[in-house]
Image (cartoon, rainbow, N blue to C red; front, side, top):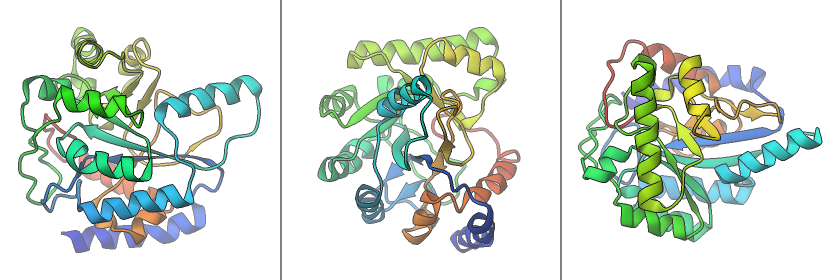
Amino acid sequence: MRVGLVAVKLAVLPYGLLLGERRPGIVILAYHRVGGGTDSEIDLPLAVFERQIAYVRDHYPVASMDALLTDTLAARAAAGPPAPDRVVVTFDDGVREVYTKVFPVLQRYQVPATVYLVTRHVEEQRPFGLRGYGGRTGGALPVTWTQVREMVESGLVTVGAHTHTHPDLTRLAPGEVADELDRSRALIEARVGVAPAHFAYPWGRVTPAVKRAVAQRFRTAVVGGAGKNVGPALDLLALWRQPVQQSDGFWLFRQKLKSYLDGEERIRRLCNLLRPHVDGGD
């Protein structure tokens, strides 16, 4: 399976080299799990992850989601030119390895990151299934609130919301959407002491109605797909991310940073339409 995934990436690479985005912008990296010891595409070996973070730190300005928000609003107010390329590091779900494996790497290289929490899993210490991504995913324990507070207190980690139970919001009634958003936001504020300003749509799926509900509660939100976020006019409630996968390794990861593999996500989105929904980790 991994050979096939790499083949797809190599097949779309010429498209990216010819037509990929060249304007300065913000690349938001989307990680899920690091060092879990599985062969799932969303579980990166720790050594590969550390090499990626070291490369990002050495070759790009790295920004937090808070800085992205502040800088974008300032650029709009000043009507100035777009900022140079920057990279933002994010993690979905809140698996335990974010604290035990990822956090030490972030500290070592002084790289900020945002962790979007599925709050029911953290509150109830309910393991994530993380199915639907190929390979032997196994279960993944969530972080604890104590661990979350420690990471936030370091100044390197910002906590965002990823709903309470990780449903597809586009399939819920408006009241159910509001409940998912409000419960996750309230739990984070109560347990961490900070009201989250940032949100990740489960499965990256959004409708205008869901987006309006998110806009009433959060300042930024990330969607599915891939691409560079360009210019001060970018949509802060529909920011693209680059999903980092085990089959990227190091060389293809570098091509993702340059937006050369954006076409891969068009193929992945098509496959996602045929994949069943699975709660508890995206």
